[in-house]
Length: 329
Figure 1 (cartoon, rainbow, N blue to C red):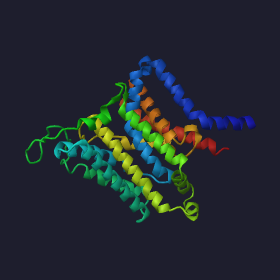
Figure 2: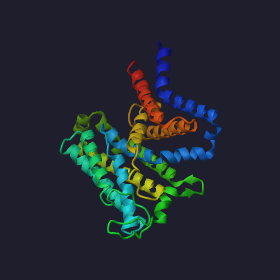
Figure 3: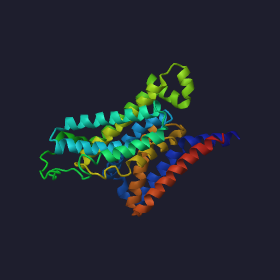
């Protein structure tokens, strides 16, 4: 019986990482190019935006909430950064500041709707998602924004993407490591320190574990819950800045599957090391796992319409495996 319990504990803790390692070896053997340095950097670069979004999403999840507006906020940042530089002819610093302020304000609105107006988090952030998706199309009349675009009054936009701004998404350290990957790792470290090594982090987790107990212990629960959504919105805006810098234009379809990829990565993080709670390390591992999975399936010429299905199956299986085994203890 003891050996069975020990096996269950090991399976819960290392099962997901084992599956990830097996998948990595399988793709490496099936397609040797998968293991090349350039492809591994491509995987990391490909998950950068969704991983940063997922790290922001970790804060609402920690407080037992959910922010469904992060993908829309990121898309808004792409459009507003482009509009600020191309149409308004301002430099990248202004574009950066505008996007970050907008992200924080939208996060604040989410927090106030949830905490003060008492709207359930999924409903409030879903409504905000639709609102922001509509707002992002208004400045450009629903068109993508690029250098030399024609404006509504017939003039031609004279602004261009700031080279310093584009470096945030296209630059490489020592000509090798993509700058967005460094931002992703830096944010992951900061989030880990805040949530794991500070009083604020312990309070966030306490609120998510038992909100009434946290309140009785003296925590300003409402302030922390609002703060979680402000942080989420701000990080989502930063992810949009990185995306805008990478593509070099304001693409109206830039949001794509960002929301689902980010939430998927954050939820997979529950299964990493069997922690069964939101955590930055698990979130990064989850994002990289999805990147490995999608990259490998693409190399195997798997039809695109199967890839999301397989991604969903993996997410459900990982969570069912982790939580199912834990309940049998």
